[in-house]
Every structure is written in C-alpha cells, then in structure tokens.
Length: 600
Ligand code: C2O
Ligand code: CU
Image 1 (cartoon, rainbow, N blue to C red):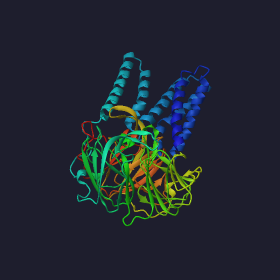
Image 2: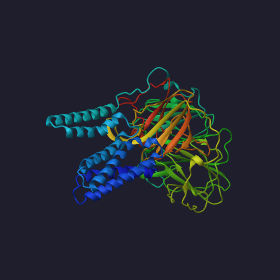
Image 3: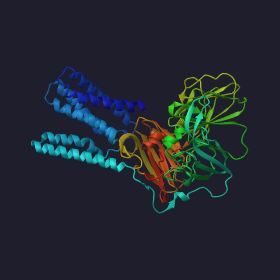
Image 4: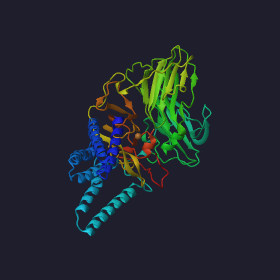
C-alpha cells in the first residue's frame, strides 16, 4: 500500500503539471504529446484510486471530488482536441483547474471533506467563472477583491487560531484531579534516583555524543524490580535550562505518575525534583523517558529501561536488556554500544533478550545461529509462540519491545540490527553465523489464539491519520494530522470508567505511525480487515503502516487523562497527539507559552 500511496501522490503532482501545461501548449508541437500524457496520467490515477478504495472508504472522498470530474474533463478534452473543436480551450482550463484543485484537496482538506474545505478549494473556480461572465469592469474588480479579502481573512484567522495561548487548560473543571491519582504513599521497597544532566559520553567505538543523560550514562540506569515491589524513583534535574519528566513507557501506572508535562504534572525545572511511586504489578519489559520536549530529549539520551521480574527466585537465565537507539548524526547503539559486543554464554543456558526500540523509526532485527521464539511483546506474554529461524526477521516499531527466547546452542548466536553484520551482539564462542535473507514476522498470525475479553463495545472511535498542510502554533507547515486536525485541536476520546472502547486507526499517509496509548494496553482485533489469527496481542505501541487499517480495543480501567500519539516523536511534535480523557477527571496542569510545559 505504501507504494500505491506514493504513486497516487506522484501521479497527482505530475498530472496537475501536465494539465496546467496542456492549455498554453495546445497549439504548439508539444501540445498533443502533453495532452496525451495528461490523459494517461489521469486514467492511471483513477486506477490507483480504485486500488486505494479497496482499503476502505476513508481513502476516497477527497479523491472522488476531483479525480472523477478530472477524468471526465480528460476524456472530453481528448475528444475535442482530436476533432479540433473550439470547445477544447474551456475544457483544458477546467481540467487544469481541477488537477490543481485535486492536489489542494488532498494536501489541505484530506478526510473528512468538510464544507469549509470544499469552499476553499472549489471557491476560487466559482469566483473565476463569475468574473469571466461579468460584463462590467468594476464588478469584476469588486468580485476579485472580495474573494482576495475573504481568502486572506480565512488564512489570518486560521493562523491566529492555531497560536498556542499563554495558558491552555484542556481539562480544567470539577472532578477528580490527576494530581490526586497517585501511587501509594507508603515507604517503598525499591528506591532509585535519576539525575538528568548534560554530559559528553564516549561510546565504545570512541565516538562521542553530546548528550542529555540520566546519571551520566547512555542509556540511563537499568531499573530492575520484582513484581509486587513498591517502586520509588526520585527525579532530579541538573540540566542547565530545560525541564524534564519521567514517563513509564508501556507501564500502566496511575495517571498522576505518568510523567507528561502539562497533563499529569509540571515539567521539573532545573534544580527541581519530583518523586514517582507505583506498584510493579505487571512483569515484563518496559522503558522510561522524559516527556518534556520529548522529540528532542529522548533522541539526545533522556531514556533508560525498566524490567519487572516475576516474583519468586529468578531463573538461571542470561537476561540481557537491549535498547536500540539512534542519536543525531546517525549513530545507532544496541544496549549502549555502537560496535560489535561479544558475551560468553554457556551452551544449554536459557537466554532472554529484551529488545526495546527507543528511537523514532522501526528497526529490523535478525537473530541467527539458533531457533528462537518471541515470548512477549510490549511486556505481555504471547500464547503458544512457535520457534522461528534466522529466515524470519522482526520489525521492532518505535517504542515497542520484543522478548526473544532461546536455549544457548553450542555455536555462536548473532543479533543484527538493520542488516549491519559487522555490528550487533555476538553470544557464545566462534564465528558469527550467517544471516540469510529473511521475511518479516507477521505478529498478527504468530502463536495460538485464545478467547478475548470483549463482547460488545461501549464506545467506538475512528482515528484517520494523515499528512496535511496546517498551521502549527501560527506557522504553516506540512503537519501530521488526526481526523484532519493537529494538537491541541484534535477532539479527545471521551470514555467512562469500565467502558470497552474500540478504535479504528486508518493511515492515509505515506509514513508509518507507531501509535502509542498511555496507561493502557490495547488488544489488536484486526489489521486491514483480517482478524488476528495468532496469539492475543496486547500492545501499547502498534505500527500503522501507510494504507493500513487497524482495529484495536481497550478496557477503560485506569482513570486519568492520557496521551495517545505517534511515537515517531517528531510526528507528535508536528501535531499527531490527542488525549483519551475519562469523564470526571480533571487536570490542574496546562500547556502554553507561559507554562513550563511543552510535552512534545
Ligand atoms: Cu513513550 Cu507519550 O510516550
Ligand atoms: Cu507518525
């Protein structure tokens, strides 16, 4: 689908260019070839739109408004020109206009097609028609001037309306405050201190990273606790001039511990502290990161890993936590190292590798030298995972975690990221086993099914992801939108405690969007209309590829105000953030120019 969406965009731009050229060139030698090319591009585009339509209605309305009439114009223009009729000129003008309008329709209006969007795109054509028909010169000028003023006013209003106010209290009101939805206030069984500070960190290859760190290290300290622990983490901020918070990615803490600046707390200023407390009830692999200026902070190093071990004696297992991270300048580290690391593991020993993607883009991970299983995804065990070989690769989405399990063989095992054979992690002795070309594991068909908990749904929402031209804080840009809007204008998903909530997520764009819901795990119901046929998948981050439609469901069992956003954090910064808000829960915190909070 990704190819189809790119082709669609390409054909749209090319056919617009050709139709605009066809009119002035009509009487030259280039006229006929350009017109033929325009007709062909238009017909090809119709074929592409038909393919897109099979993915769902969401891909069609904006395209139908222009693609269909443009096709008619193309056919008429073709006939008219071959018969040398005078009708050709108006038809060519209409075709050129519709081609450009089609571009605008898709880059500005998107889904859903609103009345305002239609007026903005088709209005200029109507005005032009009117001006052309008017006899009196003054009337023409008056109509043109009125249209220009209306356009300008609309633009200025939109720009001004998008400016972040000094203080935006999204969720003020009466009710339970997120500030009161905190972890238990009793002495912790485990306590950690994480100090955010700037440091120049030297990686094992000798390269240096000018980083923001927790406790001076990259990644930050591995927090390892046992199920049942009351965990306390004291955050101190020693960064020179930026705020910081701690968000427990994938760990479903009480709302007041979620660490989102402007939603669940104020960003901790330089010199400040904040204490987080939660009971570790769910064993599994998680991570933490700052959620103040997260698109900058996480990339620069304000991240680390959180592992909750099951209660009872720890098994005699080699258990390695391997965050994959990409710093600015393209340096990728696996578990903190940017070169090949080796580790002795005796044959016969059970091994658990906790792969965590702390970057913005998916990574392809391959394990060679042993059959292995994916035992857990996003901190939740899979049901009946079957053995895989090096011929299967894993697509680890931004924010996601896979637990890879195997028994150490006599030879070596190699973990490779993004096809870089000379790097990665080598376990055991001997040469690195080769990596055959692999196909990607389809997690929706992996493992054994089990009955799900949902019967009916109390709420049903649809999120259509796209890339559209929008004002972001007063500045126009090519933004990342949900249902046509950008943060903070995207309507929150309102839920009541206890609701079963179903959400359909549609990606109309050409980028993939790893969607992350705070405070909950979602059960994947289907992808592209095909129900999950493998193990139940409880994810906190699911990667919606271009053209894909995912249906997921969650139980509203953790009252609060929660972020739901793309974990390609620059996408979040460019608009792709909304809230899931429980009715009756309020927040005393705010974002805006005169607050310390800039969560993305
Ligand atoms: Cu790991 Cu809101 O993010
Ligand atoms: Cu995204």
